[in-house]
Length: 600
Image (tube, rainbow, N blue to C red):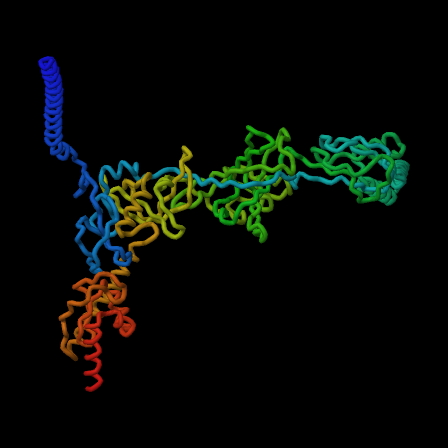
């Protein structure tokens, strides 16, 4: 029995020993493999650093903890030394987190490591010249062309016996009959004309010359009367041939177009001057655009305009600017711009709202290119009526003049490629515009730029014309510039919302305060000896921060330490306010110095 138990115990111990042996072997193998991998990685690290020809200057591949002064007025660049102090105020720097090594400390550049650039997804592209176009969008309303809008009125008193154009919207041609009017006045005028014609015929060629001239004058005057009553030459000839007066007058359309208003009915009486019809030629219409006064420099006559309407999806119409209103609407602060739009199919209807786009090429200096027509002559009263050869205006029959003599004429200019940068490369505050230039891989420099109006290139991408601050060939950051600007701000350098001049101003102020402090110390030293034994003060009496041994002043012969030079100025302005915050030993020394001075 005892031997069986002993044998089972031995078996159990053997199993445990085997298990531990296996574990020890596995651990030894793992340790050997791990040591081999670490040695291999250590051997590759120098090769990787040497194989990076474009690595930034002084950029560590591993980000460091960065320390900077907590007072923004100092404009401290910072350091990776946790025990360092601000060179301006002498305060101990505080941690601002992990960052790459900043630039050379000029306040306008910074260096970012490879990891920081990868996280920010920084991209850059060169500054170059492109053809740009300024797009002006405006909303307008279709209206009648006033030069093609006529009113048909009654020339005589009479009764409307027949309406040929009997509904609104009818399309008529020039000369079509519209209405038939019965008028007793017309009947008597025709009788006078027939009698004068018969009398002239009876006198004949053998009559007395005086009588013949009188008869001819009577015929001409009676014929002129008929013409003034609205009877056409063809109707007068018909009266002569028939020898009988017509009892009714047919009124014809003065122009071809659409009857937009019918103001009479059959059977009603009309007086001379009463409106009968309103006819508009809708084969050409006006587009009245409301353009903001800020867009006025981009608007010029003869510019092409494309327009679309929600009522006609998929259709595009073209027009030309004919007139710019000289007065600004005081309520909407807009200017009315008139566009002549051909409408041969009458698809555009009056009172229809449309959206218009004007693509204005940009020339030198970021200014609009002045466009003109190929014609050589234009009407002084209707300047949109042009001709290549000398002719009369079709609207007012006025003789056209050379286009250069038309009031308001501006010599045309040609579009040209302008230096520009993409819209996403610009950081703006409303008063300043910044761009970041990639000096080399990982090194970025801030540049304040002057820009022209936002425009588009031929592919539709938005760009700003560059008027100053950049030159062709420089690479500007187009993605990740906000990340670069935030690093600039963390480093206490010039950034989007704090210009570099502000830092310089604060440094100048601190320099002057230091000079004043030295002068005060020298003057104090001239009057009384200075007691430099001050081992009881540990905090600044003004701010309550830790003191800096290099920042002090001598007040009444007693040396007092501060955390920064601005605190010295505050102390000198009102010493009694801060003396009470010093230790009792320093207060007693200052009190003793005051008593000595009062005795003197």
